[in-house]
Length: 301
Image 1 (tube, rainbow, N blue to C red):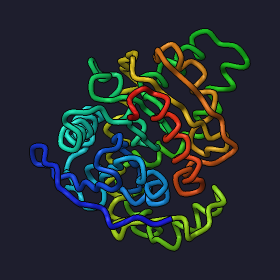
Image 2 (image 1 turned 30 degrees about the vertical axis):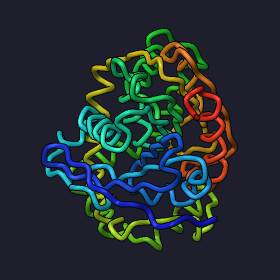
Image 3 (image 1 turned 45 degrees about the vertical axis):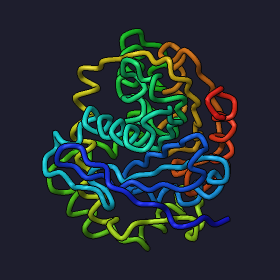
């Protein structure tokens, strides 16, 4: 399935220019897809065509990635800044109508930051979360298991810590940048994704800026992980949330979502026997899940 070339626009917030791409039915419900590390809007190339007939589909390159501005400091990659960018895109592309938000990896993490803000339900109709928890909720989940230890809880916490060990490497100075200058080539990255997720190379859509994005995007880890885990600010959301949980995710164990219902008023969950990069591996599954969620939300007309 193919679709016409996207309409490109630039959304500016302060010193940041965000490259935004729109496709589909201009009168349909707006679906906003947000990528994570080290991807760009190209992550959604397989998902977009399956939604464009009945939806207005919007993607964008988050700051530090693709065609958007690359800030120079770690603090400029904080979740507060990323969520402000997200709302700036919403205000630009759908000022008079709520959007249906879909996030993957860090796109989902910043999605949680957005939907847990006050009055988020006035701008966001639904949120589909893929492979990216709220860091605040995750911090509470870890603390509860360590403060009231049981064999099962300790095992879950240690399992997640092991899966997250790579983030410690990402936050070390200099070394990860040298690493990605060496291995951050499209052919090697496609091979890596094929090995860990079984994704055919032809489904993996990468931007020419991949190596630069890998390196600049490392600042997201440094800006957010330790500050949020040390001083979490867990908040609830009234935005309906659907979790797509990848049970073979190399970075995130399914157990971390076991307490999410305490933070979400309207939650549904689908567990999948799939890996982390679901948008590449099973794009049709995501499109179907999003379309169903939009149609059932009461805001899909």
